[in-house]
Length: 346
Ligand code: NAP
Ligand code: ZN
Image (tube, rainbow, N blue to C red; front, side, top):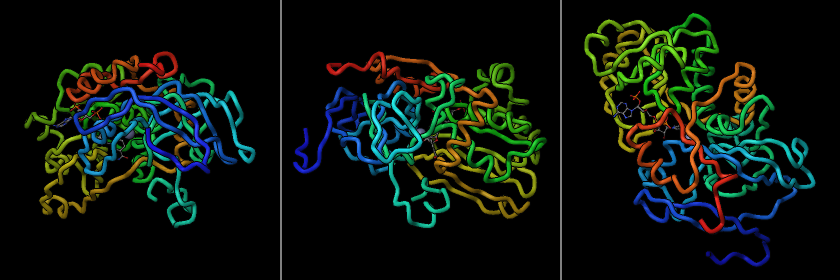
């Protein structure tokens, strides 16, 4: 364990961490700070496995620091609060996503965009977080199927709102039917839009249409289907985790259509500008969402009964889950049952 300054008090915690970029996690002991006056400490019950965890574990973005305890789709139950905490009490059901701190004073923070001013750590027994970065989970949402909303949910909800792709009747494409993608379908449908899934996996068609509520399904490697879809969409939410051609996607947009990129491949995209200029199209991006909007998204999910489709796993299954996620073999999010399966000795 690392040596820590003596004047600050810490609590012991445990979880699973990547020790290097091999992609393998193993048990790990560390410290969390004691509950500060504005802090909420909670017992972690469930944590989703986001593809960003894989990018980080394998250092695909080049900024990983080891040992690294991943996990930023975290839900649990409050065990202790600081004396100045106002919104929460012991026993409350809470969630934490990618952020646990920000400067509170820059333009982004003042405008509820703290997401643009991150930590990991939910593959562990406990978290201590400034109450500003904690959201409440309404009673009607199950904790396990809600965990992924803390990252995947807000990541798709925010751009649907920001880019105006939330108006009933608009035609919205969702590229990549994974963790983010299947939630994008659910949120976009709840907002009243007409949703086309654009996928490399023909095997996902039946379920997308029958279970997730998509209106149509397009196989992105099928030239005839791409041809038929030209100029049909008002906007596209692109959740693909690796490099892929943007040109066919721009082709699917109507004039003034918007392609919003959410996936974060480790390598840059190449862009031919002509198809962008013709039709005055726009390519944008978006990163998670601010805290106000994250609570709004959770409340919207509660109102519209939006839950993640999950496979609940035990902590010691995490390395197998990582391999399966890399192969796209999950419908649609692994969630680790931390509360029941993470053991100090495991
Ligand atoms: P995921 O569950 O692995 O889903 C990604 C989907 O992309 C796959 O299910 C697959 O869908 C499609 N795909 C995979 N390889 C492809 C390829 N070579 N060509 C075309 N499509 C491919 O991942 P996720 O957790 O949803 O995350 C997706 C990406 O978003 C990751 O890069 C993650 O880091 C990023 N992310 C960004 C933010 C943000 O704030 N912007 C937040 C969270 C995650 P089909 O089988 O349907 O093709
Ligand atoms: Zn994530």
